[in-house]
Length: 256
Image (cartoon, rainbow, N blue to C red):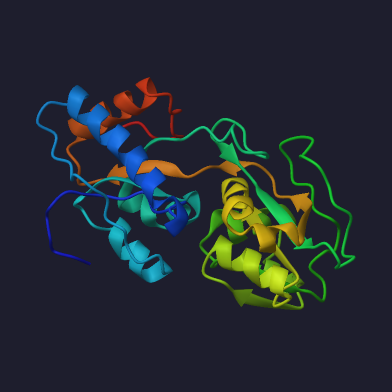
């Protein structure tokens, strides 16, 4: 972990190279609002873009100089909550399958696979997954800490997906999972609804070869976070600012 105490900010969770400019503009909006609302707050002009491999990203999240960032509830639930304080949640309502603070993942398969029929939007908050769908099939997943790519499905199935699948392959990210299923290197993957929207924008050839055959249940979406080393008064003021900007309260996100 770095010993550099210079304040850092990152928004890594949906920051595909294709949308770097959009992510930078999002951060500038947050940065300027924080500066206007919190006199004296120290914020970087631009974002840090950490290596997105799980171990490297975990080191970044543990950095006490991280004043503003994002983290999935998968890593938060398995220990990152000791280092990061959730202060607000984005609204996922703009993405098919999302609602308020909740997202869910689309289970995708190739259109020519014959695994299951294509489905529309989910009918309720519970999982809608074809029975026995993993049996004998190759399952692509981000990593085992990913809520949207692994842990949510594990909770819905009541079992480790790898114990049910014929085999599994760790892709390292939703984009890679989409491409692997489209290329026939895997049969199935679960892709969070916002990443699925990104795939349809920036991996149109691969995404067009896939169909949604099910949905995981609703889960808490990506949280906006600050290091637990951040001054509690600053963290509280950042939370208030985010809520005023239209973000939603984070579960258990009160400054303690």
